Amino acid sequence: MSLEQQSELAYTVVVPLFNEQENVPQLYVRIIDAMDAVGESYEIVFVDDGSKDGTFRLLSEIAADDARVVVVRLRRNFGQTAALKAGFDHARGEIIISMDGDLQHDPAEIPRFIEKIQEGYDIVSGWRVERTDAWLTRQLPSRIANWIMAKLSRVDLHDFGTTFKAYRREILSEIQLYGELHRFIPALASSSGASVVEVPITNIRRKSGKSNYGISRTIRVFLDLLSVKFLLDYSTRPLQLFGLPGLGCLIIGGVTCLWLVIQKLVTNADVIALHGPLLLMSTALVIGGIQLLAIGLIGELLARTYYESQNKPVYTVREFLGRRGTRSGRTDRTAGAGR
Image (cartoon, rainbow, N blue to C red; front, top):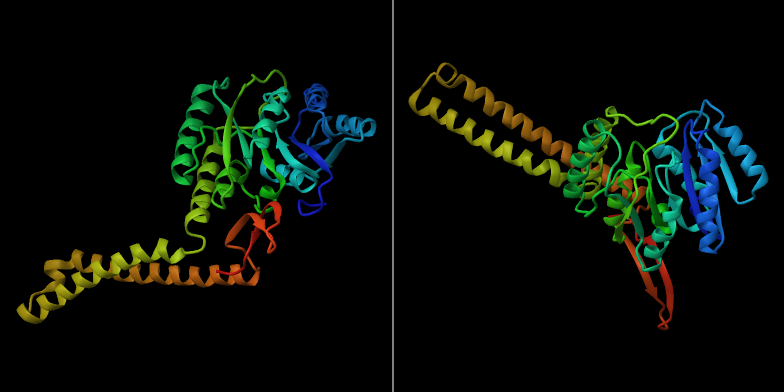
């Protein structure tokens, strides 16, 4: 089952879990209480991301008693992004809500996300206004990373890192996830015209179990941020990224080399002895400029091949009015092909 299949439910709650046996029973009850209060059809998709404890056993028991619960068990621990992707692929709801399984997200706040979706937003992202985790190892790196993400992606969010978000189904169907890209879904979707809004959420201190996040993951997040920046701004025009600095290096190096040649021809100066470092630098600039231009041109060819061979769209449609003036409704589907 994938996101492209026909939806049958109003909501799906996706929860990735890794060694959370202490939290599973209470988490399930609190999600059920919150979603029953909403009063519409829903399902819960629990994704066991290769847990080594009794998480899957508890989930199996819950699924056996409640038909609204779906359990996806991964063969090993693939990480949070892959676990979320698995949950999204098996979700049937028109609105998909993701949250962590460590009880640091309060299911009682789900109706606030739904209200914003019903107002017309495509993505609703949680904002942990008051963090409860360690300031030096968690809060400070997070604040720096969020500020950089907001500037580079041009999406005005205070908290990219939280998993507590709500999405329209069609938004997720257009995004491929890998690495740590789950935190960049608002940025990737915004580049296609999706509307994003934040809602403040309570950051509850973890009461049981061990956190699976550490400061080492910050480095991987920054590397993924570079990938996202490229995808957002240069995936369809790589020559703009590599060509301009390449052309600059080529011009500066070429002019310098020309000046050195003139010095040699006119004054018969010993260029190597007098201007050896300058000669090496100008030669390196010329070679580097040619290489950057070549990389940009190769990137253009690869981008063209990628978009044309896969019929990859370069725009998205929010609504469509029929030829007879009838509105076909909100689609948000990608359309078009090639570049």
